[in-house]
Length: 223
Image (tube, rainbow, N blue to C red; front, side):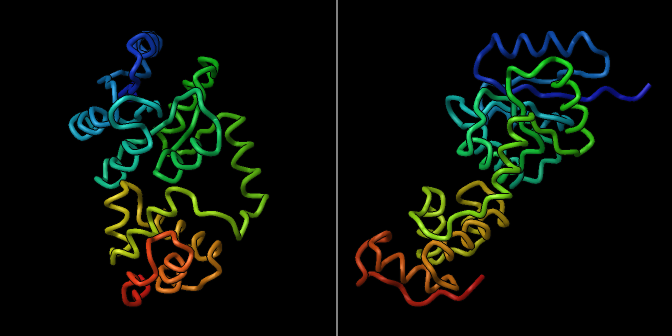
């Protein structure tokens, strides 16, 4: 008999954690090895217990789920993260996937669907609820606008670049992957109609995003 899939359940509601633990306890294919009430506790448990899958809520007091996923990625923890939440909007789905989540499921998913998703995540396969999969497919089919205001995260990246930080340093400060920083930079270039980091910083100052233009630093070299 193969070893059970080891799980850590992360949710700030004790009733939810108890319910999920009881559900998985009925199936010998799974073993709940730990529970956490926020992201920081989840990161500590994951580093100690090395579960196969982490069921991660997004909105929690203390460290939220997306930040925790990014921190797990940054620390190289091999556990797969399966988001289990009530939110399926772009503002929740995309940051979680970008941060490194293997799957994204909604809390109203049937039991069998949740079990399948955990099995898939343990194998390293993508596991998405139908509504989330449809949302991501729609995003892929619809080109992102090339102009428009920077998102809050894009502005954070631009400010770090303006301060002289490399992509790696910006990723560490924002608890996201270096690849995600590069993606944000490409979006920034498109929205500001520029081709490189130095031009993006200059345009950011020109548009008042980074403060007064007379504070502009010297040109930064591409990373």
